[in-house]
Image (spheres, rainbow over the protein chains, first blue to last red):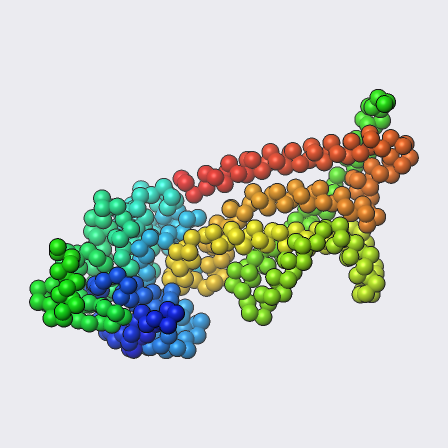
Length: 244
Length: 224
């Protein structure tokens, strides 16, 4: 169970998150849409404490913390409950594809190397990159790097996977393979919170779609409702702009 | 105008070469200590600990802002007058200390720049998988920074080897000191100092070859 209450964050006096309340059920796939600069990515980054929220409560599984007075240990515990997929892949350049996936298992989870390696190869096979196990990120295409990035997040076995515009930095030719992999992740009832501009994909994969505007959740509902019968005028305008 | 006394020079070569281990030893000791100190200073500069940052800034500023020779004299001749514990310090130790402090200030800036050169998103990725800051630095950031900084650090090592010649002014008989003594006996100053110059040059050339190989190796890193 994931629960967010009253999450706020401002940069230089401008409120980017203005009191976010959100519950996500186990296995639920939630997609966040909205115009640029409305706090979608900041929400994801705050859940992972890549940006520190100003206030609010975050619960992921057994870990609950109060953002305003989170200790270093609490932040680590929270981060270890979720896995983050970055827009620009953010692979470790000094590690091979396999080592990128093993890193969290060995260093953070303290699993034996052999076990971590077996798991990494298993994940690489699922991402269709078994033959790239020993390749460094610099020699992989954008699509391949992002599949490794997703694999790194999958291997952790986190309760929540966060996807921050995972296809936005990709050349169009690589978008399909990354979305395919995300569909496979979704098929395993992984809890996912996804920020994306791929509306077709959002419609297809989401159990629930959230529309954010001005640091607030303005409207949420099933994809048919959000895309088919939007109520809020700002959402209607946002969707209209996309189709024209 | 007189001809070079080649026989004298050839005879002097093995004598000066006998002091190469001392020169290299001082440089190597200084380098290892400077690397450790510089890494600590650089990491502090990156994370900026509020109660320490000003001291590190001051340290780096002082040791970059004053000549090595002045620093050596300050340590060896000056400080013992103020701090009685230092009265028994010998020239070699003082020289190694001076080289360490002086070069660590320069190397700290190089290492700091290399650390900050590692793409921000990799710091975030390391944090997102739940690494502690120590794990992140040790496993992800510093290995990449080391590769970037290595060629420049080798340059500082070369500078440090040449810098050991200043230990002569602290009464240490190293390569330069030995040449000076020989010349004082034979009055063949040109020959003696030419020999010592050529031996320094040869040592640095050898190191430069190694540096070129290191750079080739580093440039193809991570590209398999």
